[in-house]
Image (cartoon, rainbow, N blue to C red):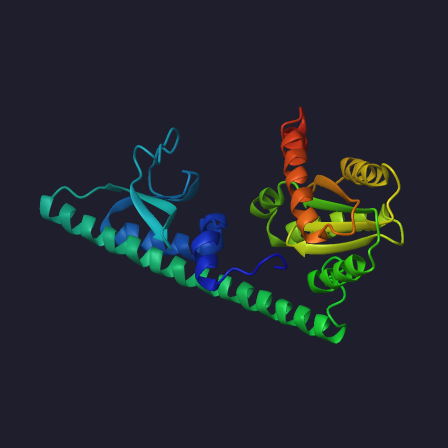
Length: 307
């Protein structure tokens, strides 16, 4: 995961929403286990996913129209989130037997939750270790190459870009176009498709920024999904033309998952006394104005969600 590494604690809290019963259990073993329980306790059992989709049925159950909100049954919860619901039909007649069976089913749900939690934690720990190893590899790469280039995108790293900013300021070059470019709805892609696709989106946009640029353009990745571009000695309307070409290239991109879109803000340095850092804040403000226009334009949400 290139854009930010969550702590293991936060991963466990957040990522459980992406797991299903089939991810947390061996379904064949779970089926056999619940069959044994059904026989021992003389009950019919139904285990559903968090939203009510059928996972395992033992015995006679009418599952159509099941409302897990109004009738949640026994909730199987892992790290504070419901991952499934257990329903039962008690076929015992004696009140004392029924009471014992209900207590037994409460224990069963606790056992299912514990087993699911162990399985979930093992899988997430494995992913977390892989993420940390990838991050260490990135740090080793950047140390070897003097942190000049961002490992994911190939544009300048934040530290190296800031050095170039200081060099341009000291050279008293004017005019300089300052562009803030931010990927629209990066979080939607991350939440919907995961870290790999959201990282790929960042790389796709960086490739477009680089392809549409000229050799003298200075392009840096200054935050996870944010880029800054400097155009020294920018000609009239050159920055506007560049941003238009970048946004058009994003619109032409065809993919079954990614729909890149970039909001741009532009400010021109016309006085050597002006700080490029201060101008970037102005460009960032302009970028947010552009982002509002793009995200509220007709058809944007349909394109984003491939509708």
